[in-house]
Image (tube, rainbow, N blue to C red; front, side, top):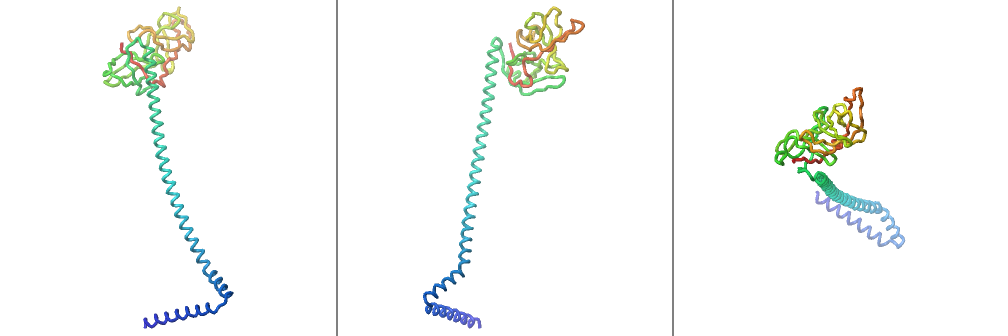
Length: 270
C-alpha cells in the first residue's frame, strides 16, 4: 500500500511538471515576461530574507572580530601602562637615592672636620614626652651611646641606645633633652630644653643677666658637657619672655632641623 502511494505521488509530480512545461512552451513572449514577474515577486521575499540573513551573519562576524581586536589592543595597552608605571617607580627610586647621596655629600663637606657615619631615619616616635627617632646604623657600624647626631640643617640629638644594626636617637626637642649652647652674639652659655607646651620650640634658660638676646639671634652648641662639639647650629631665637625676676627670663628657639621631614643624618663618631 505504501509503495502504491509513493508511486502515485511521483506520477502526480510528473504530470504537474509536464503541464508547466507545456504551458510555458505555449506562452507568448509577453506571457512569459508576466510569468517571470509573478515568479520574481513570489521569490523576492525569500531572496531578501536570504540576503538579510547573510549580511547579518557577516556583520556579526565582523563585530566579533572588532571586539576581539579591541580586547587584544586593550590588553597590550594595559601591559604597556604597567611597564611605564614600573619605569616611573624606578626613576622615583633613583631620584630619591640621588637626593640622599647629595645630602650625604653636602653633610660630609659641611662637617669635614669630623669622622662621621651616614644613616637614614627608619622610624619616628613623637609623643607628648618622648621625641625619638630610629636610624639604620648600630654597633656594627661603630656607633656608641651619646654620640652626636646632626642633619644638613643642624643638630638633631644624641645616640640614646644601640643594637647591632639600629640606634635610637634622643632628639633635642625631647622633654628629657638638655643641650649647652651659646648665642651667636654672646659668649655666655645657656641651656636648651625640650618642652611640653612648645612642641616645635626649645626653651632657652639660665640666660645671664648681662647677655643681650634678641629675636633672630642664632644659637649654636657651646662644646660644654662632653657630648656635642662646639659650633653646630641648633636654631634661631624667635621670642624672648621677660619676667619680674630678670634671672628667670627665657627665650624660645626654633630648631634649624625640621624633625617632621628628617630623613638623612650623620653620626659623629670622633
